[in-house]
Length: 157
Image (cartoon, rainbow, N blue to C red; front, side, top):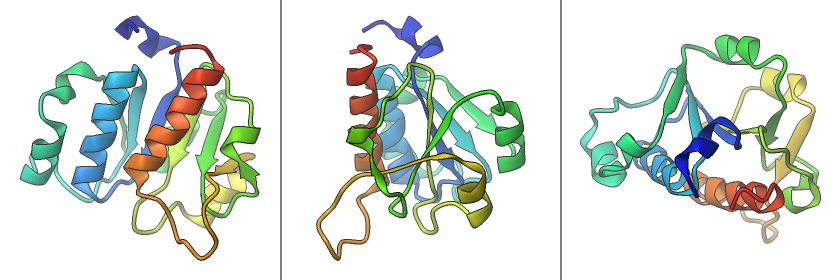
């Protein structure tokens, strides 16, 4: 896969991420699979955090990251794009959904998900099915699972 796919492939968006190691692992996943990463600020850590740097290694240079100063800024700029929210509260499994090449797949904050106002404005909400009584997967694992399916469906890998 070539990196020119960054302009035509799926985008992973992180809503106010708060765990540096998870964000760094997601940067690596996006770099390796050719997806663009978008981060909605504020982050709960600094990019100079040693925990972040230890996990991201040299993959930060491989991936273009777009930062949005707020969720209002993000949604205003994305008003004409399809945004898909990954949430444990969804009814539709990600495997029963038809991804498009330019989708933005939004993942909530590790500690709190996304606010109710975000749930209300987004039409497409998906979940990764899990065993009963399990709370949630690690966000980095969830990104890898859903991104791989999106790339498979759109034949970008």
